[in-house]
Length: 245
Image (tube, rainbow, N blue to C red; front, side, top):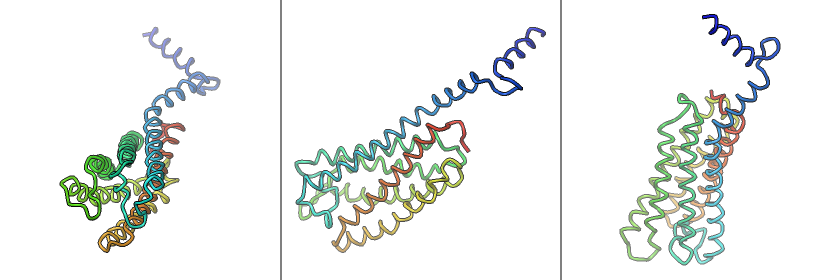
């Protein structure tokens, strides 16, 4: 028994500095352990940032590479049909990867009471839908309908709806976590803006007027949300992964 007490006292002295304060060695060890714990989330967040950036750059480049496709009237999906179709496919794959790494990162970073499982699940559906869009190209205007084009046409509105609901559910929960509260309002506003943008896009498609620009405005909104959330996720992982709410 005396040996155990001596070991306990020794452990206390080693882990404590003057006046019972944690020693520098103990503090450094704890900080190192925290950084190591946050490293996977940091990597996930970085991949999400890079994937979203790649998507934005490729979409922007396709506007110059395929000037025959009107950005006002035609959807970005039409870039997948043509000589630079592989770039549109790569853009979808990059955004899908970005979505999934962001979802996994949020699940690891947010405490369970703060997580919106439905919201994260719907974002996951969006990530899957992007791969469906990449696999089944759109039918060009005036071209005979195909099975692939029909699947693409059904998939598009459904996954955008999943994205919008998912963004709003996830953003609302940020208010409950002190580490996420700084971006709560901006993230929530971006998520809410997606609702009228989605409605406007549907009306534009129905009237065959301005569908392309309506979709591109939505792209700017949700990619801004993705980058905002991914950057905050990375910041949380770097700063202090052990201080979850």
